[in-house]
Length: 98
Image (cartoon, rainbow, N blue to C red):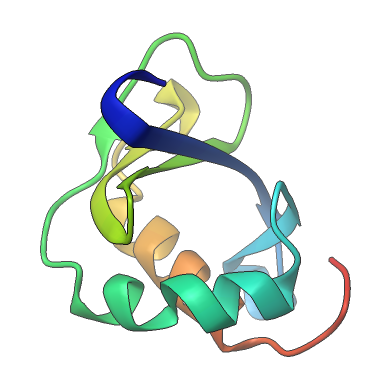
């Protein structure tokens, strides 16, 4: 990405109790927790819908150590709160892999 920006991809799927959960990602749960837990908890924006993302995909857009935005696939439109909850829950995990 340009100017030191980074796009990290994650794929969501059904979790426990029908809620969304992160099923795969470009970072391990441990790396997500260590680097992005605090920024995700503090994130107050709304995820933006991007047509170029595939089914159940989420992009975490970062500039250096700052979370700039979250982008979601069109099929997740209307479920922004569930997407944020899934990303925040994933950042709480300490497992070595998804």
